[in-house]
Image (cartoon, rainbow, N blue to C red):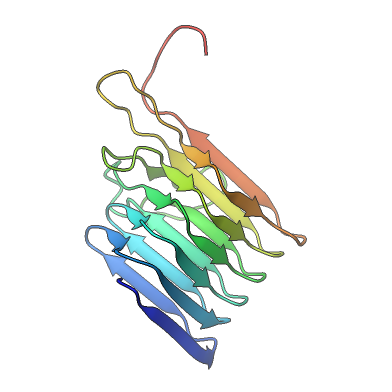
Length: 174
């Protein structure tokens, strides 16, 4: 995407993007549905490199990286805004269902954290699931499974589950 706005005004219309490699944004943009789901599947990473907005207005939002389950495919959202207005928000990876503790986005050499959230994610009553495993760099650098420097909120009755893991093994004081 590059500076695009996709607006699905008809109620219940969903959007599914599937990529054999990465889904990336080159500049700002917006995707909005009117109660429809927004689903993104990438065999590698999903990276919104600039301020980007996803609004589903009650529909579910799914970001599924590492869809081919190769162990490489992160979700990188340094300044993204995601609003579901009551729909579920799910971020993770693999070729199966993403549920609490199952289905992890996996950090890569380019995007080391499994899931990085630097913007705002708001389910407003829907459930939130975020699963990530950090990249195991060959030089004993370890990265977060889930790195949260932005806002993850649920202003309603929904649940929030975050499961982050570090890849590899290490010893010493932590």
